[in-house]
Length: 61
Image (cartoon, rainbow, N blue to C red; front, side):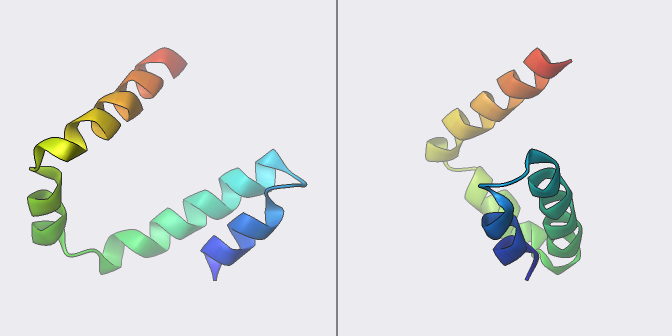
């Protein structure tokens, strides 16, 4: 539900998008299978998106 609200709020408000993204992540973390996440992130195809996110985080700070 939070992801639908996030998508619906895109045209109107950046604050709502941020709030709904945090709500979605909070509801996502308890349901994640961390062994599957670790296995998926170990593939070389995942390195570039991870690097881009890390560069964005470093640039923000």
